[in-house]
Image 1 (cartoon, rainbow, N blue to C red):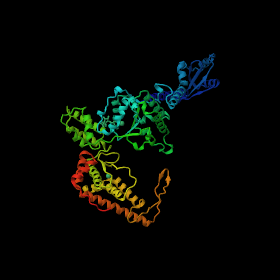
Image 2: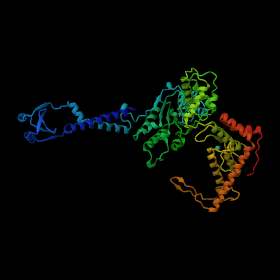
Image 3: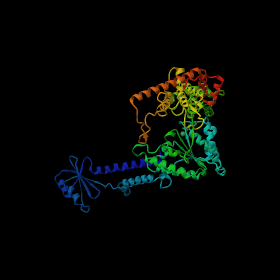
Image 4: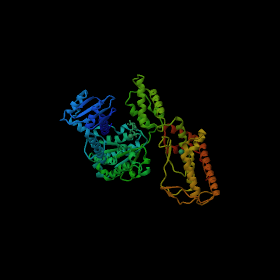
Length: 611
Ligand code: ADP
Ligand code: MG
Ligand code: ZN
């Protein structure tokens, strides 16, 4: 528990004690027996009437008298007048002397003033907190950054400890060069990005990679998590940001690492009812600090997130986190290397082929793989093994697989096959249609919500497209689903995005671009878009019900036509489809050029079905 919290709880306890004590005090004079206070003469009268059965003299000026039925009365008498004792004696009332409960002076001050002192103290503490660390050190350092500092000598992680993210490593090498010798860079006039954003699923090694940059460059590493900035008290986050950058400047060259930046860097003004002031203030401070120094000082800020989509666009503007490094989940080769890195730390029999495990773990992140090795070691230890073998790892894989419960995008064998054919479908159709963007890369490594991805490499920026190109684009989009249907005679939900894209293109061709043969050059709907709350709510319809029906029909026909075209292309070249899918299942990522080579060798049938 944090120290301040402990202190607050302690103070509360003491306060509670005093409050209880206060009530207790009240009770001492007024508990169940009800001591009534009487004036002296009334008390005398009571004694005279014989109601008092015994008495007690407390200190030198209080008499308490008790009646038969347990009531008690008290009165004060002048200390210099001893006649009261004689008076009691007279009525044969036994008298008991007790000394007055005299508290030592310091205790009575504490009881009387303690609660006020405490409330005052707590109030002071809160005020200090809100102002963000007015005092220095100890209790009042709440506004200080709390960044964890690792000295250069402590940074043991290097690029060799990170595998399967070669592209990201290449991106970061330049940064390492710069941090090693900022002056050299300055002389050469190299522009160095001061802010870098690493995005990727959890456990892909973002934190590890940031540490590796510091380790390679042998510079100090300050790390802090986005959620550390956001505290209960307004202004603390901003002050922590300020302090962290201050520390960074003093220790340059160094790396400042902000983990989970989405905790502070989410879009501003999205929260209902004014949003979160504290978070916004923190974010603003971060922006100010990012603008306030130039990379030449030798401070590099690396931020990590698994939700780059929710970040405030202001963070990504030039001069801030303008360099983005994306860290994908590892493919089969990357997984093999990661497994090898972590397997070094456990005893294994010599001839384990880690590629077997790598192939069986699609969708695993680096952290999942590390966990797999761990589980294998634990399982082996339970069986009193001295060395782990393949079976141990396979057992561990199943355990991790079952345990992950699709927490991350862990794919089953069946999903992997489905995805492979789906992506192979896109890629093959695209390769068979000359007037289309060439395939760049095909992968079945899941990213985001997509199970796989076929990426294209446009030949250049193109601002207008001809009908043939657009028609091919629709065919390609439908190619994924078509392949699934041909091979498995069933389709999965994985194609929903494709269908949406195809439908959108078809609608645009018919309704906006006048590319439909039956309608000709006519625009349906008007472009006047209404802005409500910053969002367009679509178009007004400016055509009849009948036309709407016709448009629907035309759209359906067009989609159907292209769907059939895709299926024909694929089934005519089904051998090649199988080949691409097989390779995908094995390697998970293949290059566009590979598909072209395959086509050259296999003489594809690319029959024209007509525009
Ligand atoms: P992230 O910050 O992306 O959530 P971490 O860097 O915290 O992921 O990864 C957690 C652990 O998983 C690391 O400490 C490392 O042991 C292991 N790990 C993750 N990715 C890799 C990788 N690419 N190579 C080697 N180990 C990795
Ligand atoms: Mg992390
Ligand atoms: Zn698809």
